[in-house]
Length: 103
Image (cartoon, rainbow, N blue to C red; front, side, top):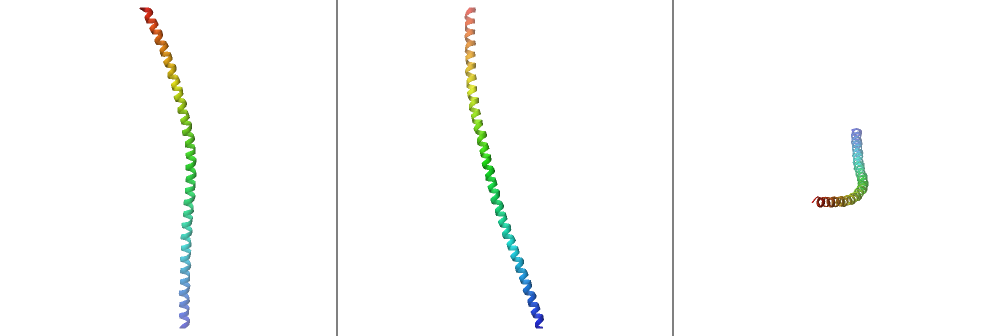
């Protein structure tokens, strides 16, 4: 009977050890999974920040060139307006001269 009790006791101990090992493995898996998730999030954030920085650089280059283009168009427009005003004044002068000549 004692040998049966010892055998049962050893079986319980073996089950407990197996259960403990299984729990330890689960804990390590959760820890590793959590750590991998955190590392992935850090890497994702770094990538996002890098891409955002690149985007802002490209955006500033484009907006800067658009600003220069806008200034250039403004300058050309003012020059064209002055040119047209000059032509208008010359034509009006000719009309007045011709009108006076008819009278």
